[in-house]
Image (cartoon, rainbow, N blue to C red; front, side, top):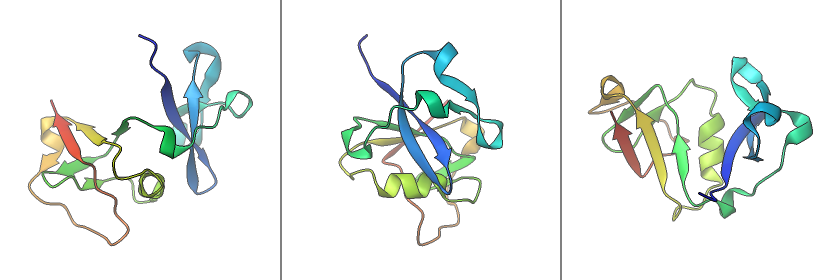
Length: 115
């Protein structure tokens, strides 16, 4: 379809974005056992050049707040993404709550899709 896919890679305490071109050659197990771009195939992408951000989470609430794993990786990344770029949380129905605890640095998503 001609779409560019960008995925994060853990680098220190931050996520860096990299364009994904080849699933078999570009990915390797990275931090926390999650597949991510290998250092040799990383193609950096500026967060301001994104059209849409799909955001994982352990849980979401109906106001767009998310519960992650507590290290702030996605909160720091989302803070660098312009507010006009849609941020969509993806989850199952059992991960959607009326309210979640909120901390000052938490970055919300603009929509939550639950299946």
